[in-house]
Amino acid sequence: MGQPAERESGERAAQGAAHPELPPGQRLQKGWPVTHYGPVPKFRPERWEFRVFGATADGGKHCWNHEEFTALPYATVVADLHCVTKFSMVGAEWGGIPARTVVDIAPPAPDVTHVMVWAEYGFSSNLRLEDFTSARSLFATHKDGELLTAEHGFPLRLIVPHLYAWKGPKWVRGVEYMTADRRGFWEERGYHNVGDPWREQRYSYQEEPGEGPEL
Ligand SMILES: Nc1nc2c(c(=O)[nH]1)N[C@H]1C(S)=C(S)[C@@H](COP(=O)(O)O)O[C@H]1N2
Ligand SMILES: [Mo]
Image 1 (tube, rainbow, N blue to C red):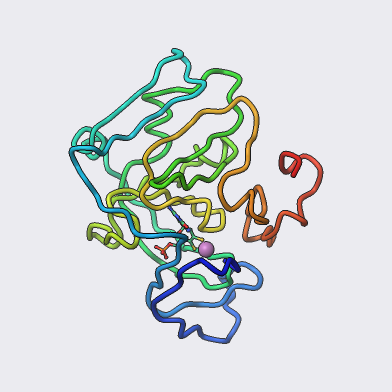
Image 2: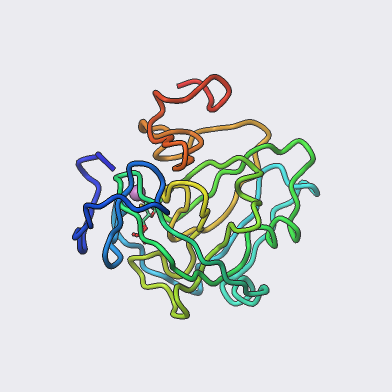
């Protein structure tokens, strides 16, 4: 994403032609490249936990270990992945735990408006509560019936189909409920606070008043 330290590997055999199902400015990507900042974390099941914290309804913290979290009801969502660097990967079937399920089990306080989704090494992304709880947002463990690979986010990544892919952290470890908006990792570094690919909300300079906290 325009940052020199960002690693991008894998096939970049993008097809040049515009695709009617793709958001504006995006092109189809063959295969599935790996795109992220920093190293791939090692999964240590005995140390892994998923935490919901911040402004919870009961004021407490909710934690699941890996076995507990992956035992939550499984669902699938077919969704595309749109990287702000302009490639899209279409038609994946993601499997995992709906974000809605987590919110139902560990509800936010009534004044919560946003969430920060936290991943390994302090990576984060902020979302409006309604984007996070949209019916298609999923904490994915699988893609096309197979467990995610380490570089694609194993054991858990968030998929928010209607937003750019940086809004879906790989190696996700928890959710913070917030009563005011705050920028996550890329949102602090020049990317749009909302990130709707259909409106081409790529960069923070495009933000309209009310779309993000002051920079
Ligand atoms: N933890 C973490 N998650 C991340 C990122 C990152 O840098 N760190 N990059 C995001 C971006 S910009 C994209 S496009 C997708 C890429 O997912 P993929 O590597 O599985 O294609 O992961 C997203 N999730
Ligand atoms: Mo991206």
